[in-house]
Length: 99
Image (cartoon, rainbow, N blue to C red):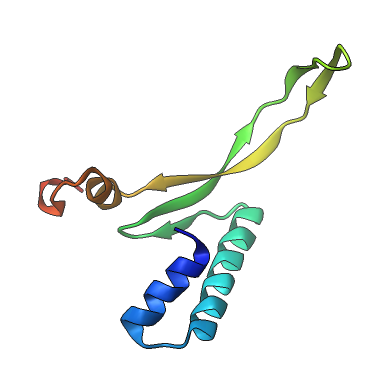
């Protein structure tokens, strides 16, 4: 499913114009990126949380040039789904999920 598919589905279900939905989704994603860029976690109850993880510095090999390179410590985005999200994906009833 693409972003355009999501926009179409939301527009069908809500009756709101696709252009407005597109704008809202873009702003929503920008806000999440900005929060993560500022080392803030984003919690969406019933969906999951977005946060950053730090990858330690490591030594790697460039096979084509036969050299060793150092990859510096850096942050990566991470997503941890909520228990209800996991239950939905697994096809389980939300009632059998403990909070």
